[in-house]
Image 1 (cartoon, rainbow, N blue to C red):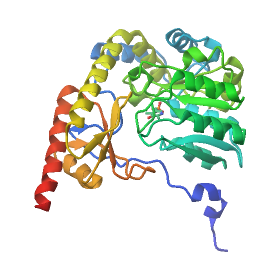
Image 2 (cartoon, protein in one colour; image 1 turned 180 degrees about the horizontal axis):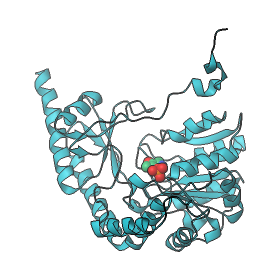
Image 3 (tube, rainbow, N blue to C red; image 1 turned 45 degrees about the horizontal axis):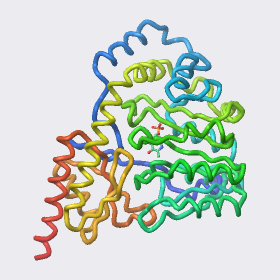
Image 4 (cartoon, helix red, strand yellow; image 1 turned 90 degrees about the horizontal axis):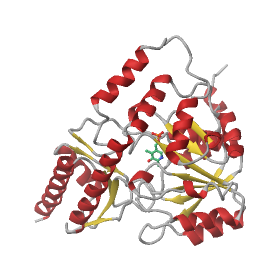
Length: 364
Ligand SMILES: *Cc1c(COP(=O)(O)O)cnc(C)c1O
């Protein structure tokens, strides 16, 4: 008989492309919104020592109690309303697993982080896209209308939004939560750079879910730690879809160390925020470049005339890797650049200027 095992994969899965990122070595890596400032060596050393003092043959704790308590204190929320995960993406998945089935409608802004739609499709759900405004800003009224008209069980907003950098204001978020009891998940992967968080709204909005990560401001992308904050009732349900022992002891120890190191990390965040605003101002002055205002650690750039893929390759030849976001809806003319160290940002600006000049010469 002819074997066709692939016909047993769900059509909704066969029809989508995987979330991938081609690995490209670069001296200046500004493509994944990582933190340019690594944890101090002494802190890493302590984490390694802690790991060496523990048997590796034994499972980690079922519930990482100490981390949960520290996260609760850090975020200003109750411990029974905290769930820790192997990166916040894992918790986004767990949340979708307990809310989305065939035909479930999930409201998301567009453009935004692609994972929400991808996982929704894998689960057989349907995404309802609400476009950002003419300046790529959130359209809270439109979000409220769509959510209300569809009685949407779940709305996912990313604030600050990746890859555009815009915020959904806290009062708008509160109004969104108030209008219907559908869950509202806010992905706060970049909140430390924005000075705004939805956490103070949790006490009044039992349908609000906040997702956070250690991968950006906390400088721990390599160790995969994230957390979810919500009412204890919601946390109890999402926890059912969490895989047992999802957080290994090494990552837990590193997350605890990063929390203890927050004063140092916060100073780095402030440095990055200063560098972002500086970079933004300098980009405004480059003809043919339109940077969008950002409250995160990256900037979206629109190129008026130059082909973004050509510019991408040209800055790459000068050692700078940025993110090509031209495949996102409405961003056909855009690149996204992570705010790096001061030296990295200088290298990027110079590479960008060269790339745009090259183009002028080629045309002349
Ligand atoms: C980087 C990022 C995350 C972080 O995911 P982890 O799994 O915690 O590394 C989450 N959401 C968005 C929108 C991001 O850009």
